[in-house]
Image (cartoon, rainbow, N blue to C red):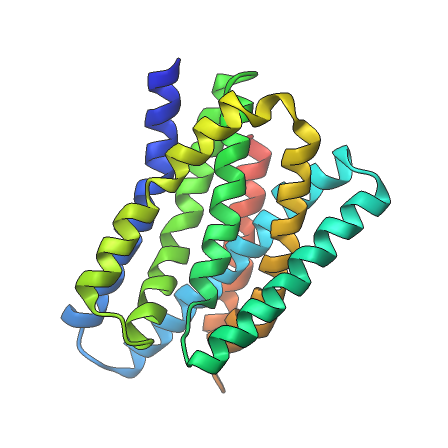
Length: 235
């Protein structure tokens, strides 16, 4: 069972690295053109839709199911305020890491949930691993491009993404062996993450994904949310 958990969580995380590789290939092997620019913004919008679906369909429902109104509100507001200050700090440094932060705030709590669910229903955990992996691909694509634009070298960015891809395994093991007996703590973590992700999504990610006089790019958000609906329905 432990081997299966590592394999499933490893799959959900390896797409972080694959998304970085795909972004690097796209940036350096596809000629600059208006179409390339539109595709880039479509992926940004698509990733935004997937992140929003994770908040609406996975993270928040867990908090609402497990926590009291006051407890849920506290965790959500704490996450929002904390990431407001983190975002202001990063803005002063001139970095563009909001997408990376949102991806990890989404990925790690879901990986923890994957580990907890695996102990109860392995078949549901399999679907959840696939869902998380599909989420991470466009999110990592956008995050990698942001990091390179912030001044990180391609090699350094790929190394960072390689090690981040193992966060799914560590998160799943933590959820399976530690937090599976503390569902309320996991719910607080997910609600806290929701507040931070939603702030970053509205403040940084969605405005960057918009293109003037282009409506196809914004369609990506709806398609991304649809992926979340399909994943949640299957789970």
